[in-house]
Amino acid sequence: MLLTAYDGAILGPIAKLLGWVMNGVYYLMDQIGIGNVGLSIIIFTIIIYLLLFPLTYKQQKFSKLSQKMQPELNAINKKYQGKKDQASMMAMQQETQAVYEKYGVSMMGSCVQMLIQMPLLFALYRVFMNVPAYVSGIKNLFTQPLGGNATSLVDGIMATEGYQDTMTNLVSTLKITTQPVANFTVSDPTAIANSIVDVTYKMNSSGWDALKDAFPALSSEISSTYETVSHVNNFFGMNISDTPLHVITSSFSAGAYLMVIAALLVPIISYLTQVLNIKLMPQATASGNDQSDAMAQQMKMMNRMMPLFSLVMCFTVPVGLGIYWIAGAVVRVVQQYFLNKHFEKMNLEDIIKKNQEKAKKKREKMGIAENQISNAAKMNTRQMVDANKKQLSSAEKELEIEKANAAKSKAKAGSMSAKANMVREFNERNNRK
Image 1 (cartoon, helix red, strand yellow):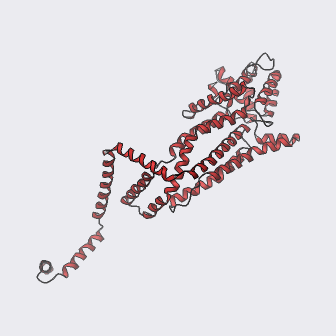
Image 2 (tube, rainbow, N blue to C red):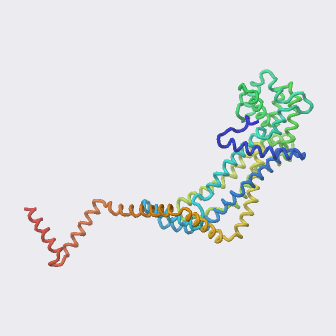
Image 3 (cartoon, rainbow, N blue to C red):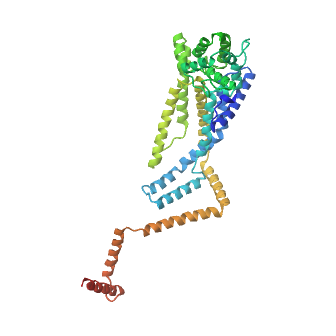
């Protein structure tokens, strides 16, 4: 089963773990008589987002604290605006660090949470793009005899002479994207069988008709498999392996206008749920810092573009992937709504105080090492300031000499400065001679 799964070094193991959970969800639902891939995707998505909720909570908490301390950070940015010397930059960094320590949060903020969440979500995408590789119950529909047939669909295809070229032509004609062996020329029969499952699972209804034309002797096996797979893949009358665009065109030509509306709702609902999710998210405000404001503008642009991207893409990807996007957006909307209510009632001052106590205990554990680092940083700053004072240009040196000469010329009679001036004038007259 694992041969057709995504085998990336990082996402591969994560996808296999998530696939194991997805397989468990489908198995339990199948045991109670409601084995359906679309419904399994929704339940599985809810489970994953609930598991990620602690990370989401920490991320949202950091956003609220960031808004609270933003005025102090803006004041520091304004104080050092335009100052590019090393001493000023180090001083700005120290003051900024002090603000973060005051509120008891890390300068890395939610980066750690994002670094953990992103691989999980990308791996989840891999699972939904190739369900039979991870859900054994779905794969068995292709590899075990169905409907009283003596052989399975996969075994029947592999027993047909020249099936490699036939399947390769179908992949090219139907424009099916699959992995890892779309040309069916490897020597491992298990890998070839897995590739046949990958290709046939991703076929839409017209693809199954093409499969019947390509293997007329397997008409019974193909019909039985398609009927069973269509049943478990059925979601509001749509096959989740079909794209909404295919459902719209085929249903419109057949006069099934309700199916056209159902297919249109997939990208539309995906767009609306993501827009609502972004509306509920904490939004970045103007900080007075050019770099921060530029990043905030880029984020706003991405927030506008991502729902549109989802709207367009949902027409051309399988319905099952659209269900995943919608389910994920709905779960995030619900989470965000209750998080916003929670943070509105929360006393941020108490949180800041607790964070400061934690930071203080952490500094106490660091002990001398932290003091040494702080002293070294201050010493380096003083050394740079002194070095800057010593590094005078030639023009500045001449100006200092002229100031000194002017001060000497105003010296009182009989003073040491006046006598020094007399010696200097005597030497200058002799030199001219």
